[in-house]
Amino acid sequence: MIIKKLKRTSFKKSKAVMIGGLVDYILAGHDDRGKDKLAYAGSRNFLTTTVAAQKKEMISLAEESIQSKMPVTHWILSWQENEQPTSEQVDEAVSLFLRGMGLAEHQTIYALHKNTGNYHLHIAVNRTHPYTQKVIQPHRGFDINEAHKIIAEIEHRQGWASQMNARYRVNEQGHVVKNLQRREGIKPKPKAEDFENATGEKSAQRIAQERGHAVIQNASCWEELHAGLDMVGLRFVRKGSGAVIFVGDTAVKASSVDRNFSLSRLSKRLGEFKPGYYSERTFSKPAPEPVSHVCQEEWLEYQQEKQRVAEEKRRARKKREEEREELERRQQERRETATAHFARHGLSVLNIARHFLKEQEREEKTALRDKQDQPEQKQRLPRFKYWLGRRDAYSANLWRFRKRIAPGVEVRKRTFPKVGTLPSPYAAYREMVKKRFPEKMDESRLDAAIALYMRCTGYTPQEVANELYRHTPARPHGQNRDERTEYGRRVVGYAFGTAGDIDIANINPTQEQIQKFNRECEEMEQEKIAINERKKVEQARPVFRLR
Image (cartoon, rainbow, N blue to C red; front, top):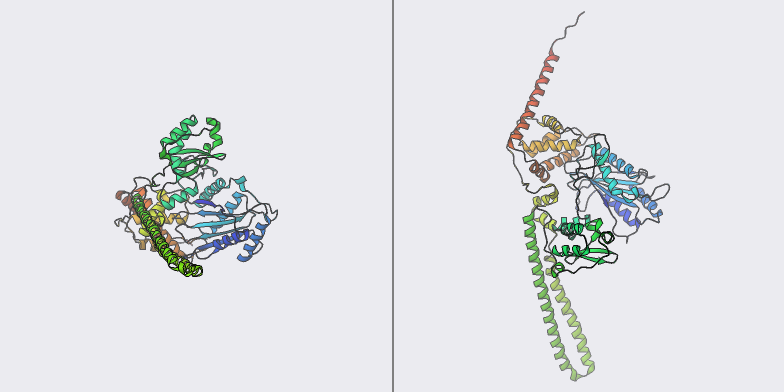
């Protein structure tokens, strides 16, 4: 699971507008494209029962907290592609989250959305206590770290898969502990990662971390620090009471590269700050670098397209300047001719002529500007991820899951020969998968693993969907037909989609391994049939009773 806290970046809107818009977005039944979004919704600790009344109640309580500009916090919990939570699991996850944050008595509105490839839960919680009207700061501001502990507990209780580099895990005794296997590394801030995800380029923050971290860490004096950064094309400059690292002409806060690289901490280690002298190459903008090995050929093609569009824009800009200069030259000649012609008729006639010439020139400039602005709209190049999505949807999905693809792993659409012969393999495959993965696993994860194994043994998507529809156990309190169809569609979409291709590529099963698994399932099914036959024979025998 992934958890994210959305921070408020603008304080121009009032609390009522911000909270009302957030609640409306969370509880909306459809997204901007008209797709069904809302899968489940709930609320906690309200006096009223309707949505409109609860929204007003939350706004009213939030406005009582004068000392807080925005007491309502917005969190998002996201499941993986092969996981589908039930309404009961959502309620339990919200209870664990509020209890862990110390907000169990606070107003909360939450909703589960299904309009993306991942089920994700929005939680809007009012930190203003409904009785004391005191604004609570969970865990003295270290709420994100605590949220990762809560996620580990939810994963353990409900059987979800944890992230590869999760901060915390639950040990054998049931206690949440730090994940010692986690690879601690310097990585960019979320804003820089969003830029990388959109453009495919390394952010200035990542470049500063990769090139300059070791240099600054190992420097013994300011001269050595400046010389080392100059060698890798970076500059360390004092700015106000802090410091920035320049990557070309882009400034990166020094403490964002590493907390120990703030000016105050470096001054304690290296002495009073001394400015350095840098070569000319540190002032030039570095060439863009790909942030990932995934879709690298497409990224290079995108860079060529980007350069082509930039060159076309440069030529168009030059052409516009020439057209404007030509228009100004013609207008200047016309003014001079008109002045010489109308001067002998007196000042009044000359002023009238000048007025109409000025209006004519204004109209000509407006017409030229409108004509020049039209092709500008066609030259805009979308960001890399959108460009990739329009070009090839499969490559766009690979880019989305790029962190799960190790270097050297080839991900492709694979077709497997049909080795499965069971007419109804779900039960046998279920037992075999549970045998291979004895840890606690949610039913949706289990069904996704079964569908993935069935794909490897050659079953078609329709055959897998039919098996899931006939044999998957009903979710708590049952499912209607549409819900069961949606459930199976998501499971099959994972197993035969890009996420399934990546999981298969990471495992890279051989044909011998697939045949061995299928043979064990068939033997298990035959043994089960034999046991059922013996039971039928025993039940058919006459029972002799002594009188």
